[in-house]
Image (cartoon, rainbow over all chains, first blue to last red; front, side, top):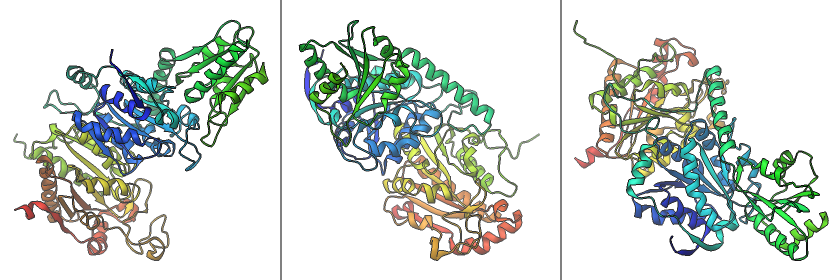
Length: 360
Length: 249
């Protein structure tokens, strides 16, 4: 295994993406993801890759569409307001079945909001955001290591299902430094293999007749019956992803839990601290941490509500978004309570602990 | 029997979906003929816009991407960067290029992306039913300027070729017309230069075609040609706005 290096999340995810074979990156500067775009600007030329600072997030995501249409591993990144601008392009990527990776280093909103960590884009990431019936695979890392690992997972999932994958991080994960160990970089031979995997549909060098191909990268189906078929086919893919790709972590989940917490990303780290403290004081509290927030680990949440659990408490850095998915999962089995924090502020372990104690 | 005229192999067998008298078909054919003549088809990828020519991705017989409205230059940039050895062209109308996609086209031109742009200017939004375009003429009546384009209120038509030629990077920019057979012969020469410069990897090139919209102008095919000659040619002068190959020679 490689050595551990101390690195900011924004830089770690960029390095991991390059190692995973990403050779095209298009983005527009925005805080708090600037280290990511700057890392790509420095490193892409060293691997003969493309770094291009676009005129807007709209242009950047459409450059992703063009490069993804050619079957190449391509990524863009931004923070909340910039992700809103990308939503048009994300809908087109989904509609055209294009593998691609989008990183959202979330900040406070709505509007210009602020530049501090937040989780207010959960709805946008998991419920649509752009127009039409579509889904993204959404990964929610909670450490710099996991942020880095999510890059190669995201590219593999994107290629496997021909789908855009979003990494839903936040300003804290982007800015903080932690030790990280990288997977080995893809070899030239592996990169060549990657380039071959999409030749049945992507745009590339053509051939004379009779081997000529006319590939169309497209989300338009003007005949409603054809569009219906297209959307239902997308839905089959989404159902397959829901069956195969759900990921979550369980922390101190056991048959004797009094309270079950659910939190993702940065919020889950603070909940873990509170659970550790409560354990010392003789209380048994568990945590389910979704790693994929779409597909959502509903079954894992429901299964973790064991016989002694009186309540499920959800912690998010927003005013209550994922809690809706928890309520759907728990389906009235026990009451579901919620604590949120907004404005780019992060709750303290003491605040979380107090909230759990209120429910004990 | 000897074949003396045939469909260019750079077009598919599909029938065009354009209205009678529309000149998109002429523009498509010119591009496809030149692609054949320069033996470029197998190394070319194109981008279709949103607008009347939205189905261009079905008509050109090479790999094609259908872009979101106005985003063709950004999509083409991604394609060119992903497959640098391929030739990439875009085909856009006036609403797509000069209104919703202004930022994308200006910055692609400013970067000098080695891509060919074909810009069809008929001074109106055709597919959505005849609304005012950024290139609609002063006083021109459309469904969203029913009292005529008021330049005090919504400004003047954008002269795209002139605007682009204010930038340093573009290699070749020419405005041509499709209004007479002689003009079409000249237009083909411009298309040839634009695609040749692309093939040779020289830089950003753009051909602006002055065209018509009989359906939404409320005129027949012949009347619309006359109307364009009287009204569009004086406002949008034909000619070469940039040709670095001449400067280099």
